[in-house]
Image (tube, rainbow over all chains, first blue to last red; front, side):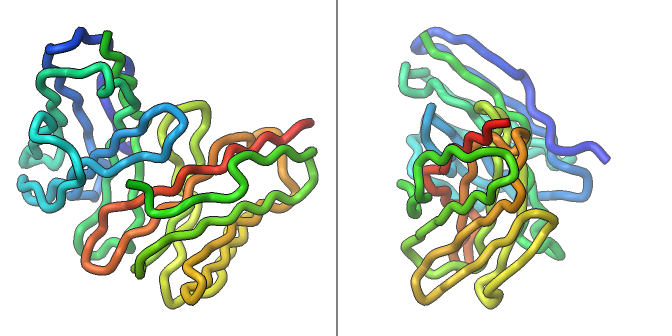
Length: 114
Length: 111
């Protein structure tokens, strides 16, 4: 049973560029959430997707956008990258109905903006 | 913004000792989850406790929840060097399943 997978593992971008991160949820899960974790901090909620729509959003600017595909996989897009966007980006999946609230995380994508 | 804080921020113990870390949060919750993170990698789900539960066990882990004090504790018994990691609590409020994390406790277990 495959867990949550994310790609790529590491990414280096330059300020002003755009980046796309990808996530495949755990088998049987239909909801994907994205988190940003700065060094030495706890993860912070970016947004959540269910049924291909954004259900909830944290305090992140519109430069952060996402998408969910019919197979429940998801993408996180960040435009006009800033140095402060350097962080570990984590994807979590869960089951919207019938789930017990547990969210399972992928290994993360380490984004470095120079 | 962070929901709350873990205490202590860092903890160093010897193998075989017990490790206790605490978590405080600010708003009413549906459930509280504890996660482990090794060296900036992904989070590993340890245990979930619901707001109507007071104590839960899983192997060497014991979690308590006091909703009146808005606090939880994680006890790791008979610690091992492999338990060295950062530990986070995360809460989700009623009618929302976005997780709000604390600041984490860095646990170091010396062999």
